[in-house]
Figure 1 (cartoon, one colour):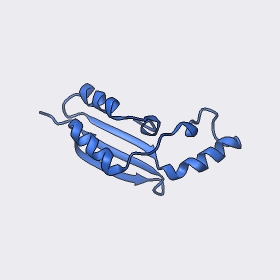
Figure 2 (spheres, one colour; figure 1 turned 90 degrees about the horizontal axis):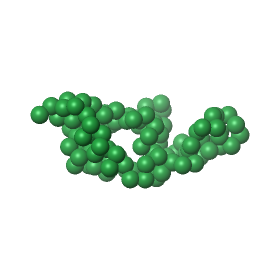
Figure 3 (cartoon, one colour; figure 1 turned 45 degrees about the horizontal axis):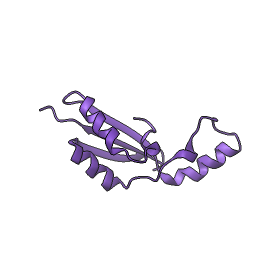
Figure 4 (cartoon, rainbow, N blue to C red; figure 1 turned 135 degrees about the vertical axis):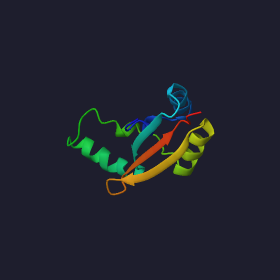
Length: 100
């Protein structure tokens, strides 16, 4: 899920469906931008320096990382790994469905 999470007002149902569809041992990989980048994206969009398809004006409030990790663990995901990249402006999260 690349740049999807920030568009979801309530991601838990979708994340639960992803868990359900993953094969045992499968992985969920997500990226999403930090909220701090939204004003810059809005400006770049307004002056035409980024694609008209950019939907930064539709970004939802970001879920705090501890809450997202808890949500994923409650769904059943394990081995949750979060880190930031691109100068800390983006998030990467990898988690797995148990092999059972």
